[in-house]
Length: 46
Image (spheres, rainbow, N blue to C red):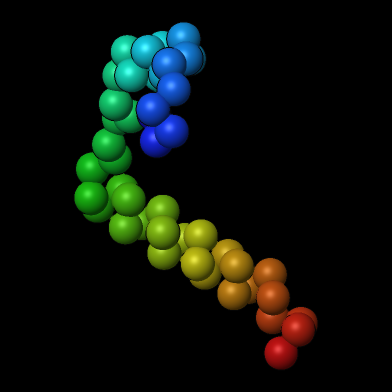
C-alpha cells in the first residue's frame, strides 16, 4: 500500500475484522502480571 502497488494480499488483509479488545481491568492485570514475572525471572542478574 505504501509503495502504491496492487497485491491480492492487501485486499485480503483489509477484509479481516479488527482484533477483539480485552476489557481494561483484565488488560491491566495481565500487564502487571507479565511485568512482575519478568522482574522475578531476572532477579539473579541484579
